[in-house]
Length: 578
Image (cartoon, rainbow, N blue to C red; front, side, top):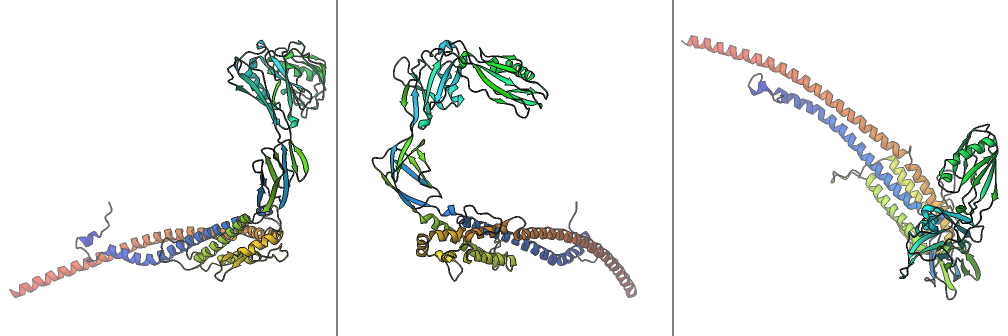
């Protein structure tokens, strides 16, 4: 165990001087000014890093405020007056313009709603449990069949199959609660618009004959995969048509496309493959074939049409609750029709959401709303004033009364900080590169610079500029840019140019980042210097301790000799006295 004391001094031996404390004091006297100088450099570098960080945040805030005024869409805020708000709502986009309109809602777009006959339960058996099909026609087009497999021959199964098919309408089961023996009904709902009207009939598959489609295959010129009815089949380069057809047959016969449907089969004759559908398939959809890059050629012919059966007992969709129809609106005297109640293409930049018909024409007025633009300009003014205040702190004197203040004076005398502050002032006071008709700078729209360097808004001048020279204001600030670019030599307006300059100041590799990195490197170097100083001082303490110990030993020997001679002389003197 080390004891931090001078044992010889404690025991009264040696010179009587605490040589260990003396060595420490001498080392501390030599170390302290050097250590304080290095620590002061570290603190100054840390303060500069903090100041640079604060300056970056100031610039980022200013950039955010300038970005609110640097594109044309930033100025397109409108206030609307609608005399029939209960009949339709109005919203605007950046492409709207001040205007007045008459709007009359004549009819609403609606979706077809069709209801089935009633069922005793959602799991009641249909078609004696045998598969059947629904024949569906949308907008009078050729009917397509939707197969209801035997596992789905219940009202709920029909609903699930319809919803899984994306066939053009949706289905749900509704319990009417009418007290009858068959309160459950299937409700079919199509898409809005007259073009989405539909008809649905049933086929119990009692016709006994399903459709047959023949696919004629050509040979493969490259190896790969083809698909038939969604089933992948591998072919090899050089396979002739018969080989390809045979491979397709083999693959289909082991796939659920065939194995899961009673009545479906596949046969081959040379390069011709016949797909024999089940009667319950009705008229099957077109057989989708993909040949990729294999070079296989195909042609499809339907050689046998399905024979229709009877209607499925107890399942009919003959009651329309609501017909599919288009919306009709008369705008400024012109009647237009749309398949939706959200109309976006009649008045430029204006969306009408129809709710109900109007008794007469309503008045719609679209006017510019200066309030959001004023709010953005005031936001820029506040950010600029805060920036000027913060720079004064960063570049001013150190606040000695607050030891926790790491920002004040952190950039005092810094040339880069002075340059950036000058650039910020120029962003506010400079002339736009897209000025027009006397609206050259922010001062022309009422942004006033006071003697103390702060900004304020002259609202009267601002409102007049927006009212009388709106397009010139937009040009001055944004150069009429729909989307500002940060690259290239372009006219960007006051706000767009400011965003570009600030972005350049903040981006990777810029002077601010370099200064911060250099300051951090200096801190690392100073910390190494501190370690080296501590090492040297430890070595110096060891040397002083050895030297003082040797000196103390010599002094101790001399003291002993002195004491011994003194005793001898005193003894001799006593002898002579006797």
